[in-house]
Length: 259
DNA sequence: CTCAGATCCTGTGCGC
DNA sequence: TGCGCACAGGATCTGA
Image 1: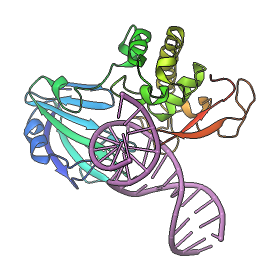
Image 2 (image 1 turned 180 degrees about the horizontal axis):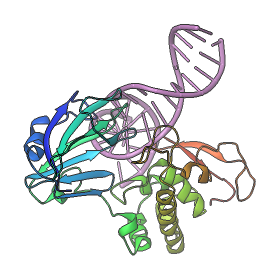
Image 3 (image 1 turned 135 degrees about the horizontal axis):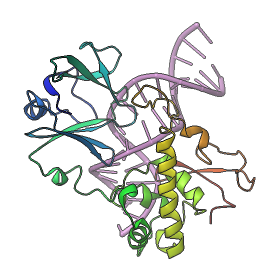
Image 4 (image 1 turned 120 degrees about the vertical axis):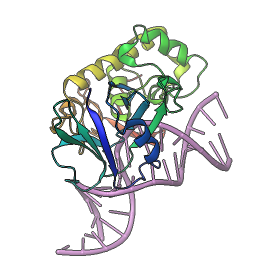
């Protein structure tokens, strides 16, 4: 916060989408950073002009360096930053699989950006997530797992946490959404919140690539109850965990515990 | 309305 | 040892 972006170097511009270089320079170059926050998995960096919007995708990360030249392969963007004392540092955007994304928004109304305006609720900032889930599941014949992974319903729940939350709530991922009772919605809502809180407290889930901002892996993987445990015994009942594709994603659950 | 399948991408881990 | 292939995942799009 308060630091000034002096320059941005782009080493390639094809992430998931083309990086809007000129627009990002317009928003950030010569400007000081007034606010940094996130909505869903999008990081927003605010200046007087507008916002840079950054999604890290699967394998993206932002790290500080004293050197402006890329230190690792797959460093695609480098922000040159000056603090109040005049000290220069460099924020490197690195993303091997280039599933990440950079976008921009002019003016203060970031909520209207096309990537952000259709997003559902923040699960940890919604007091009645149970009601929200109940209303969102009525008259829906989709399977419940695809509903909680859909960012139009709520954000932040990817494949790993969807599997874990459904196990915690004892709900079968293939169950049709509108067949969930009110109490099942309540159980699912609190399971989602608990799962996310526990994962955040553990520093996230590292399967392979993920690193926290200090460069360490996240330790939630050791707490996973079902994800990645196909054919291993359910930790609650001992029956074998099932792996089955749902919505194009491998889905892990216990046939016996999850109804 | 819903879903399967494809798409974007690279590192990894497997079988042969 | 080395090659080819399947797989992982967030978000979105197409066609059925």
